Length: 606
Image (tube, rainbow, N blue to C red; front, side):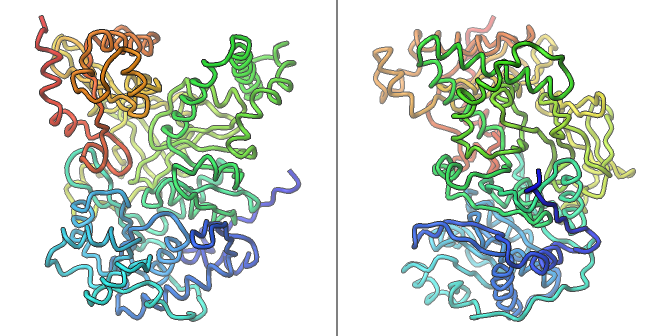
């Protein structure tokens, strides 16, 4: 461990998020802060902390020239990249409040947020995104300034025809004044992050500088990070998990952040960047798990046997290292299996990952078992946008994959009525923007934030057991939590999405979206036309898919029995309003859209 060096910046020294950056730029000016892919040069570039400060100063002076006042809201609709950082830090250094927008969100939602937050300045990735928003905005007065990052021909035409619109390259000065740390109040509002709720309008979560600084620092007390660490950033920075864990936290530790090019190119970026730390949602690991399982199942029997042995021996080695299992002669095989079986798999992830944090949703136990068994140190965490966002995470030395870890230092948790997890601590939000009623429902008079998740706490670890609102009540009164079932079913490579239904019914059914990439081959196996809608109702296909689903649920309790399914091809997406920008299924919208198919499942009921 001699090559790993800590250089943490304290909350007291930083005071504010922009203060954190200035402290880091002064302390580590020559160290690499960011790596990004330059499309024009078709190569990877690096920015030191000193060079980043020079860019932030340009953006700061340009924003200052807009006549904004502290507390004014400015928004950004950008892919992850250095400019996201420049704009955010520049705005914060002026006492402004940043409002991130999701790049894949519907224009209607973006306009609602712009209007609700009274956004004065908007930074947009390109002309096409602004045109979609502008068409929905109509004659609304805000924003008063729109900055287009990309400067193609369409962007130039928009800048000439609309006085609000400028190109970033024309708007920015050649250089900016030297950055000086301000005497900011840590309790001032830093950002409003709109939650992509699965029902109703999004709510604006108000987070202060202290909320986020505390959360980043407390996370570092559980998982050590070093100046030599390299983070791969691919979750959207508009999501607080990536923003706190993959942006402010590395800044506090002095680590490097590399911005992935796209999800499609992530496999290549992993091999090129070779990150040591990564934050991801379970779906990323689930897809790799499905591909691995497919590849292994297609290999000869001895290869399949060796792979399964490697996972089981690796899991035994993990449990032994954690102090939960005694020594076994099988451990003698681990060095060989790690080199010959696990090593090639981990090399595809860069070969240097010393920690991968999974959050945002529960991770299926099969997925955690496989990756940890192969030697990838995955730790599961838990949090909400409203808590900045991290509440808990598993320590590497006490990693219980079925739990979401231990609470951060300084965060209190307890289980309330209906087994609801309650949270209190410096990370709790200031409240919801322009929504006192919703704030009062979320945070009670004693300061406890009501998460809506059911949990138990055992030996200091938190275990999420369900969601208060996401419970199906069958006609016989039996209560069924569908989330774990849906997670297990979706591990099948043929299945892209699934929704378990049955509220008020006598049995459970499911809407199943098939993997479009595999559908043509699957249809031909059954002698069906892939283009014909009626192929999805072929009795042989439906029967076999139902069997696959029942096999996926074989280890579940008696209530988890799916009796009928409806097969679909059109995926649920943000564009058709079936998914939130954070990829959560809008259950109410899906049920409404497919009400006829659901009724068909129960037409023969009884």
